[in-house]
Length: 485
Image (cartoon, rainbow, N blue to C red; front, side):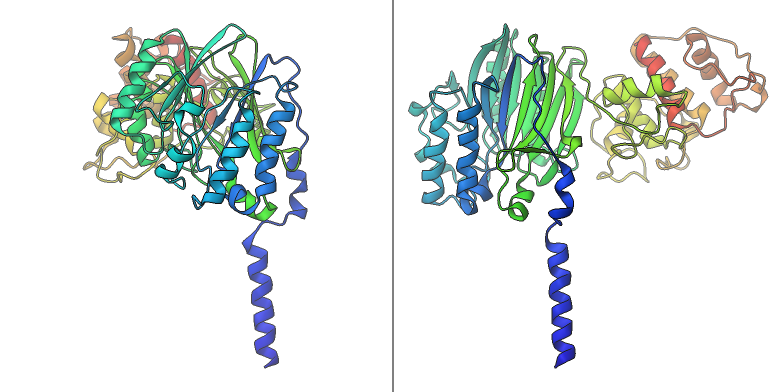
């Protein structure tokens, strides 16, 4: 009996240890809210409130207490909702939401969205369009709406899409977007991005049918997926414009902390181009995790985010690595390390190459050893379709995507990519001392890359064509190619 009791006690302690994070040990994860000193206005984003509305109503009310009380001091110009206002779509939850959200009516313009936990009938009954200030609606309800906002000389169009918005609603959104070509468009919906930064099924449909087609869409926001880390996916639309996409949802922290009242605060510079984000808990009066506090640029031709690699400060590749990382063209091995001297795989290199050239990865079959659900499947499909991969890199329809890429393979891909964008590269002759070691099929591309100034070789005059390329060497290649495209 004692053994059984001891077993049960041990099991209970084990389960209690793994159920939730140790809150006491995580206090260092919280940092004071510090608004930028030079911002002109801010937009607040209220992510999934479902757990707070159902289980922690005081914390839910606290979100709107904070927004109302701090609207003037924080220079709030707009408040965005990302859906899942309720958890069980009960009458009590809807009454609370109705009361709290309408407190913003005379304080700051705002948007609302329906999430998958919000029953459509209850949403429409609680939030009739006549009670809200919107500039247009798809079907006369608050399910799909748009709002116009001008602040500090910057003109915005907010498109608010329902959970699983129909293709007809997306066509309507496209029409509204085209009617306002001079406004920067900020799109919000509930279900768009997964916790790993990839797009959901709904997200892919919204991206392909709407978002990627319009060059004035600058920012895409969603909730839905669980994740205490803000997911960032900065990519290119069909016309080469850069679109920043963020998944913001801290609901997985609400139960461990008994409700956090998390909101994202986007602080804009006067010209609207630089945005500094703070991920703030209205309940704890603190921001969660340094990695969730970052800067990005909403300029028409570039967006940059803050990166903090601790292993490149004294590395020769620092000035090549950092700008590309800030543009999210290349990523670190972790949030704080880049590992510049580590090798780079074929799949990794091709993924970065397409980003440099602002080419969207498609979807389809490529090689026998590339599964359709692999993270690089779209990259290899597009690279193969574009002819970027020489037949000498393939054996019996096997590409070996996880194999380290060699310097000559890297050069072959880069020259083909350059010529796909700019036309034939000038012929060049190689002066490298080890030219006799080059594979026959790469000699021409190495000569062309040398004449373009993309490759320069080693201090001893060699090129080391068959040696594996490092992550830092790839960064140099991408940096030089970027300037030529």
